[in-house]
Image (cartoon, rainbow, N blue to C red):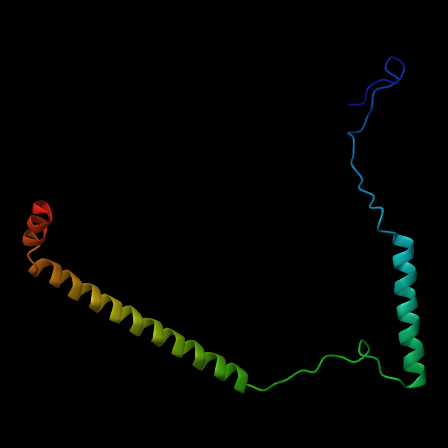
Amino acid sequence: MRVPRLFFKNVRTEPRRFEFRSPHYDPKKREIEERKERLDQEIARERGEVTDEATPPRVSFDRSRRVRAKQSSRTRVIRFVLILAALCYLLYQGILWVETTDFGKVIDSAKNV
């Protein structure tokens, strides 16, 4: 519901809005540059010159890259599993060593010093 204008002349009917105007950005200048680029491309096409932007990117249907990527990911997973198994085995052997070792003698010798 709007505020009647007869009684309240200075009341805003819309919320305040923020508009950022960068001192470095000029939309007119940007539009002029884009038009210039398009015209340069058209002129180059008319002359028969090929520009980098006018040529479409090359599409490759080579599947060898995909096969190599799959193979390398498999080798990474296998290497990770082998390292993890080795670390688990070393941890198990360490636990067995700690259980079989009598640390009482080491502690008693440290107390006497």
